[in-house]
Amino acid sequence: MRALLSVWDKTDLVEFAGALRKLGVDLVASGGTAQALADVGIEHVDVEDVTGFPEMLDGRVKTLHPRIHGAILADLDKPEHRAALEEHEITPFELVVCNLYPFHSNPSIELIDIGGPTMVRAAAKNHRHVAVVTSPSQYPAVIAEITEHGSLSETTRHDLARTAFAYTAGYDAEVAKWFDGGALFGEAPSTTDAVVPETLRLTLERADVTRYGENPHQIAARYRVAGASSWWDGVTKHAGSALSYLNFFDADAAWRLVHELDHDAPGHEVVAIIKHANASGAALGSSLGDAFSKALAADPQSAFGGIVALGGFVDEDVAILIAAGPQADVIIASGFSDEAVATLVSRRKATRLLSAPSPEPLGLSIRTFGNMALVQNADEIVVPASEWRCVTDATPSAAQLQDLVVAWRVCARTTSNAIVIAKDAVAVGIGAGQQSRVVAAGIAVTKAGEHARDGSAASDAFFPFADGLESLTDAGVTAVVQPGGSVRDQDVVDAANRAGIVMMMTGERHFRH
Image (cartoon, rainbow, N blue to C red; front, top):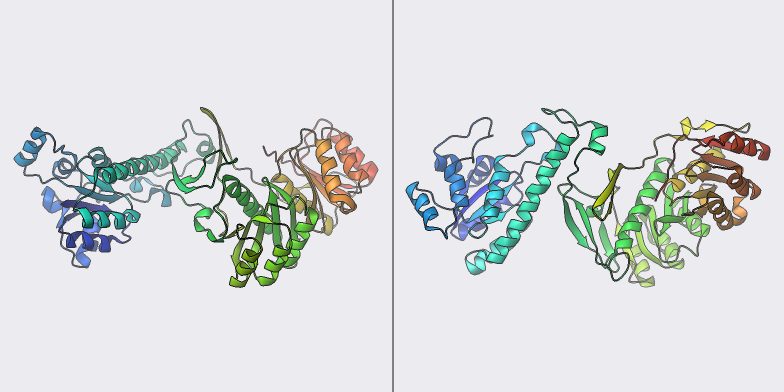
């Protein structure tokens, strides 16, 4: 067997190449790969010794040669191909090991790989005779199969080729996306064009198969953008059943909300409890246990079967509090002590316990509908509280402003129409997903109960009439934040002044569908 090695990512390269040599495989290597093998004394032949032509143009041209590509592309079932190889003294390759320049790490003209994708695609095309390996993760299985059978099976070559074409497709998509964003000779892409280019190329690689989809009769999986990482890739699962589609969906919403609330709450601990992607309670506290107790008290009934997200390390004392509360489907935190895990598992073995890193920015939002897709950039809270406008005679106290910020953060991540009431840095009443803003306000008031009095409320969009606001003020709410922008804004402001409450306007709407 003869193998061509040309890799950027040299993870486990030496071990893999050494194992191939022990199996009697002849190695040909290019550039830095050849140097890595030479440094440890692994026998090989340099590509330039095969081609009879030196590497040139700063390494842009080294493997683009008939003695390389003829050896990869020859169909050995065709006598005329065998004759051509013999005429030109070309020995065929049976294995090509190649991974590409990491374009996504620093997009630029120089990191657009040419020789690598050409070799990978050539080998994948000719997979009847050539196996192509594109990731160090494939090395162990390849070595094991060659050790056992002396070669790689047709099925293995087919699977490797499928992976290879997906790999180069994802790579080309990254480059094309960069150009779609306005890249020209290394210039950075334009932000606007990067969001809505003329074409959008997206390659996804499967990361997890979920327990089931939104419903048990649906099949689902978690994918990630090829070549990119997700915070989910850094999650450690300490206990519990496999995650379902909704577990992923809701846990992501919970973890992101905790980090958004934490952004505005230095010196506080943060907990959010999520049910069907909406918060049932969220709180800032002096300790993690304090924040959990407050978030749970906001709506203990809805918390059953929900997601508990804690923005800190869970010790045994906090675990005891959680275990005494309603059953949670997922508990996610920055970490757990061994004692905390044991305590939570003793309550319910099926509960998923997840340690997680901070989430990455959301980036694009893509929703598909059959053969159509709607694309937008992520909904970020751009306008800080310091830039909100007070439009009433009354002005907010420091405590009211903090509650307004909590209500606004939670409201922005609640299904529209949404109204959220907060008091003492706890989201105590959440009205979500209503066709009428008045009804959403009524639900928030009902859930808040007596805590609505002297509370602060947020509305994800403007009040079209004063009736929604009056529902809040009748319950005792004393401060409200809303985007503004209605033709009847003055009527709503007048109603706020008659009630003697504070009203802030952000100029920024946060619908969520």
